[in-house]
Length: 74
Image (cartoon, rainbow, N blue to C red; front, top):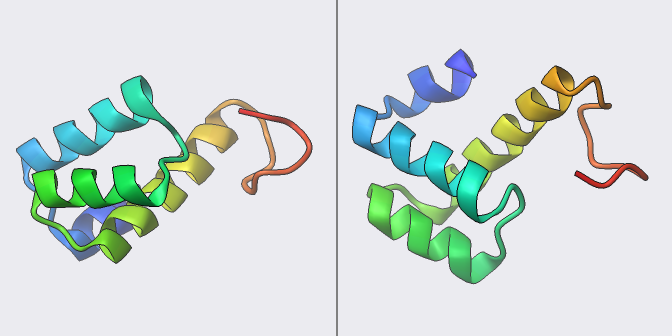
């Protein structure tokens, strides 16, 4: 995920908050949840959504799944 992190220049707090939400809340947050996470991190909703998309692809690759959500539910 270095591409996302370097382009967004995430602080340790932002990265920790995003990762905690990814693992504890949802890998696919709805619009309201994305808005709340973005506000907590001081990022735009679009930046937060992009981070989740890239993080999901990384997670799926680590799990040996295709990079895009398909018939296998994560």
